[in-house]
Image (tube, rainbow, N blue to C red):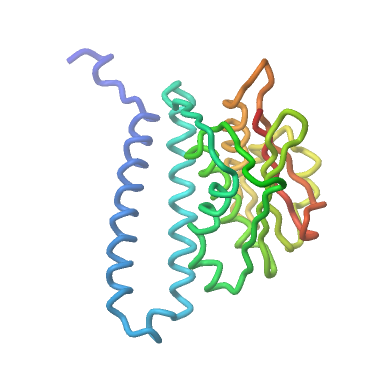
Length: 230
């Protein structure tokens, strides 16, 4: 065996490990759901249920992001856009978090600016970005999360708002530098925003690329994440 054969592609090993972790987590949550169905209602509605489901979705979201960033790096993340009704898309994003929202007594809502509004984007990739933002909003909001979609000029604008304290000023002031490093007080790495920006940029039309933006002037008075898709 040559020295070249013995060299370890560490990024590939990490990606393979993350893939296995994601599959294991999926099997774990499937078993958890089956076990939950066998418990009496009082035990099934215990407070720990919300913690388990929230942290599981958060962990799954991080694993999806890591795999996505690896595939972006090696040009193996295909874009599969299709026409979608925004009403159905936003409703599906909230439905994925319905149990956690109810467990934490958070009101989830959505609105689309016009009936039958359509978008042309990769629902899986954009859904993973929106899902990650909802997970973060669940952590920081007081009582409500609101999703909305409308046309902004020639681009589709999807927003996720909450009624929490909003984004730290440092994040708003350095929006071009999404990977801000690890915040030891929150554990945030900024990779979620970096992933969101990369996914937005994959969407291009007539020379215009998508992008994201953070604001504390959202519909509910707290933080608001916005993603534009041409």
